[in-house]
Image 1 (cartoon, rainbow, N blue to C red):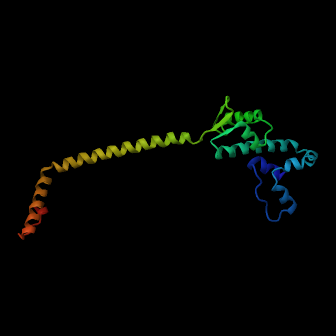
Image 2: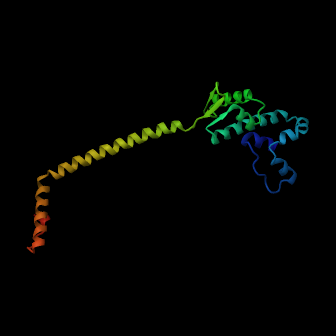
Image 3: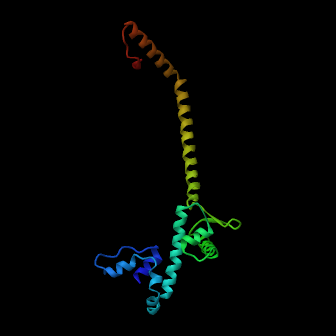
Length: 183
């Protein structure tokens, strides 16, 4: 049951503790465990769980395909997921799309499936944040420009910079040095 539940939930079997029997560990590494042990599973009345595992593993395989490929044909998906045909692959894809597990578009004419990035909404939110930050930056830039213009046209600034220029000329000619900022 551990193996079946791990396969259903995770799509693979998580490592067992070191004290677990080596026979159980050997069976847990096989993804075809359900098919190999079908008579024993039926005898233990776990066939319903085993069917859920098979279905879950097919869905998990399709989910991993969406992370690897942008476009696949229905036949390729059916082959990779171990499905008997494209109709079954299409049914599972429709179900996964409707439940929000994946984002994809199925082209009925060509039989191709285009997987979409699930984080597109994140892009919209990120763009809104960027626009807000840029507008704040532009506002600050305008305020700095306004302050700069105010300072440059200020009478006291013009007087002090004029005195600094005269002081620099005097130092170059060797004249006396006055502290301009005290004036």
